[in-house]
Amino acid sequence: MVEIIGTKGNIQNIDRFVQHILELAEKYSITIQTLDADVIYGKDHLVSAVQHAKRAFEQGKNATNSLAMEILLYASGERQIQKSIQKVGVKKGQRNIALVFDGKLSDDIIETILKTLDISRDDKVLEGNIDTLKKFGLTQREIETVPESHYGHLILERIAMVDVIK
Image 1 (cartoon, rainbow, N blue to C red):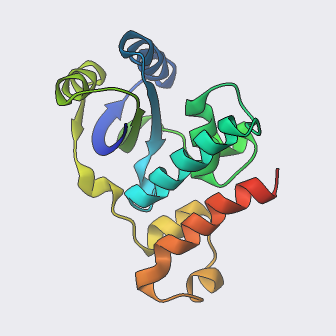
Image 2: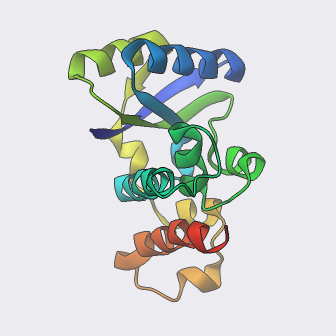
């Protein structure tokens, strides 16, 4: 089961934060990916990234050895891990954070994870706008090609393009 939530938190040490994520994922036998929510345009953005990542593994076309990293690549619309991390990876400081869970989990597990990471749930941080599109790397010209109601489609197109540029 895929679950996507928005959160807010203050990340003081990225390495320690990522280590906690890895430990929690192993403890609960789930996949967890954290992303900079300021570059995420709604839940559909991440649902599509997860679907593409899973399909890549099913077809043997994955570029990484973990589902979490493959989700990162697709969510960023990039094929290089370093570029993906720079673009959509979590950053130090007071941040909006998107969490992607894949696997069997309950509300209790999610609450425990949030408490362990010292972050609070706020799904509103996942609501994208024109600034989100620009932070994602879309140009004003690209944005102007579609009505505002279709802005999310621009992101989905970038995700789909990852398969083409492999």
